[in-house]
Length: 193
Image 1 (cartoon, one colour):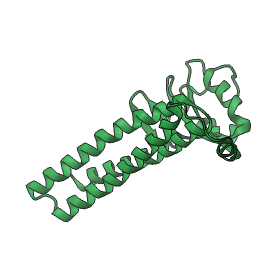
Image 2 (cartoon, helix red, strand yellow; image 1 turned 30 degrees about the horizontal axis):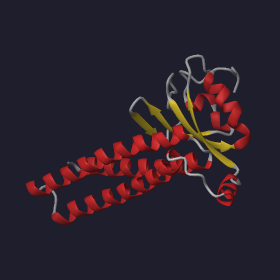
Image 3 (cartoon, rainbow, N blue to C red; image 1 turned 90 degrees about the horizontal axis):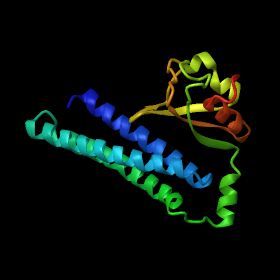
Image 4 (cartoon, helix red, strand yellow; image 1 turned 120 degrees about the vertical axis):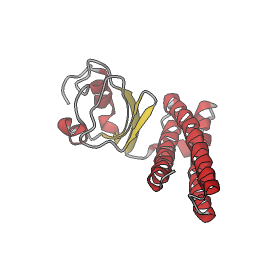
């Protein structure tokens, strides 16, 4: 495993764990089972990636390509992301087990001005085939795309050159007021941003 590969795997573990926390809290706050299920899928992905990282670090240490301390550092960093991912799964589990939050907790969570949404881009959506920078989604709707799931692949922190495609699952943050408009755009019900 090269230094770049280790860095890439650790970065992916970190980014996915952060994404899982955002999604897990959102699933509970907005009583959204679909988002909680996404957390479970991501956790399985992180388990596999974490295992692969550990295996490669040990193999490289055995071959003498990594010092023991370097291999341990890589494994410890991977473990930290795995612990965060496990915690996010436990948070999402509250939603999946239909645990009712105390009204005071739910009320305090709902006071936030920002929402996190999950929306699927339909074929007839004006977003289909467009780059994020081209449509200026954040400017025009207030919704900022922070992740895209395209099949089994995740795009974390897409930029202005990322093209949105039919079937993409967009994860966005933005003001509550923009929720319905954004969903109408992704479904193709509204043809203007």
